[in-house]
Length: 250
Image 1: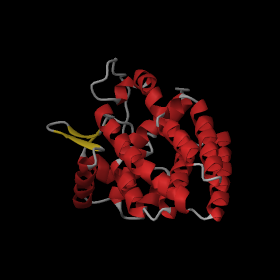
Image 2 (image 1 turned 180 degrees about the vertical axis):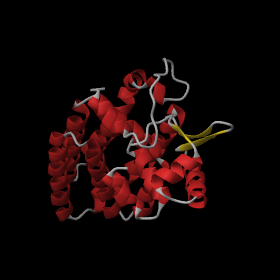
Image 3 (image 1 turned 30 degrees about the vertical axis):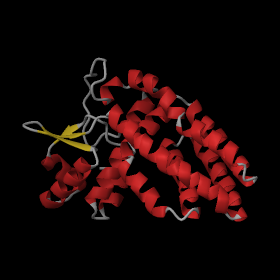
């Protein structure tokens, strides 16, 4: 067991730990495991193990397979499209509110966050970059007084987040494009140019939609009902999927 996992397991909150491992692609979509595997790896009892799985199944991150065990849910494009729709519908109104009410000091904070994103991009820290991307967007919600809406998106749009991670892995230009779009949004917001803000906002959120077909083709075995041959590879709870695909240059 890695140092990271030991440290996380001390938190005694399996739901949060397992969810984090799924949405950050430490656990490969389609991985099969038993409740015994889960409890042994995360060093918890069966009762909290079952409770965590039930909660994650409700979020579409876990799939129970009769007579086979439990599976880290594969990516469902229909669900992802609905999650993206939810985020777009909420965030476009948040952005309009933000432009109307933000304090000037927030622009400096956003610019600092973009510099942090650049450093993470240079290090090719995909997980750190995606976290920084989310923190950047959280600022708009906080300034508009819509933290509850942000919490809803974080909880309900986790499959869409997994797709975003795959997009970063597939094309090195994705992170650079994200940074450029963030810079354009901040530049437009600093002059309260709502038309330009919304132009870049829509372009930004639609970025992955245009990449979707290529992502499915490259990682077809990770999606439900996708054409393509399932790769015969062994993945379990101990294997860091993101590290494994990076090491193979996929």
